[in-house]
Length: 374
Image 1 (spheres, rainbow, N blue to C red):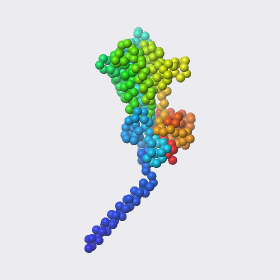
Image 2: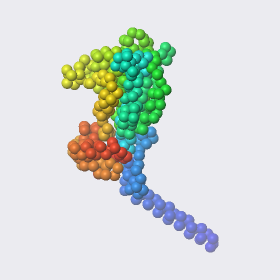
Image 3: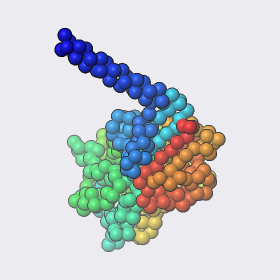
Image 4: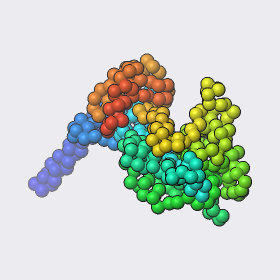
């Protein structure tokens, strides 16, 4: 009898403990579920650690959809459908640009003349990879990739590539040093392949291509004559439609001025018949300077036109919402401003501006955006 009473007492205690656990869980859920971003914020408050959303993981917002913003919709799971919440590492905001360099045999020719000590190939390499070249100068701010393209019978297009990343100077330069010009100029087919690769690159930043070529395009099906302009134009237009701007730089006069202009216009989504210096909306076609220093300046001009401080938003945001939003850079609150802090570039893009943008480019690590989440 005494043993039966003892067992009954223990069973009662277990039931009371179980009821307490259920009540505690109910009280937690009654307070509202935390989203993934809220959990990140909580861990930062408790541990002082900086959190980075991995775009390659489910819920990270990267990968899968071509050009999809790496934004986290915190509102959907928290019952606040208008909440726009983004937590990203600054490296994921860096522009990704693949430099497509013509590797055809004509790149061995002297530049600017046949008697010049520099070749088309060497002047491009120096402008990119010298200690004062653009890759070394911009590698912390821009995710550089490279694709040297050519074509041979049976292997066309042939691309030698390094994927886009920050701090990529050594890998890109090493690839350049191993290669030499040879083969044809299948510009359209090569660009189509590069575009497909850029579309699946997990990044929140803009994607672009810088096409550096010394001759009119040909095609894999017809290497001679150089009648590949329609195929190249179609590839550039598809790239722009996919959200990838294409900039064009001609090394030598072997690529016709009209062809260069058409490719430049298509790369910015403009009518291909516009002419730079005549039509206000025309895109600028670049003809390479005959000096390394001049070419570095031209490449820098292109890179400086990339949006380095832009944040893609998942939904359209009104100015009235943005002006009362909360944006922090490495834990420092930024004000809504047109000159220093953050601004709404358009309903789908937030822009960090002024000294705040300079701080972001110089070494920012983490950006947090909360709009309509209170």
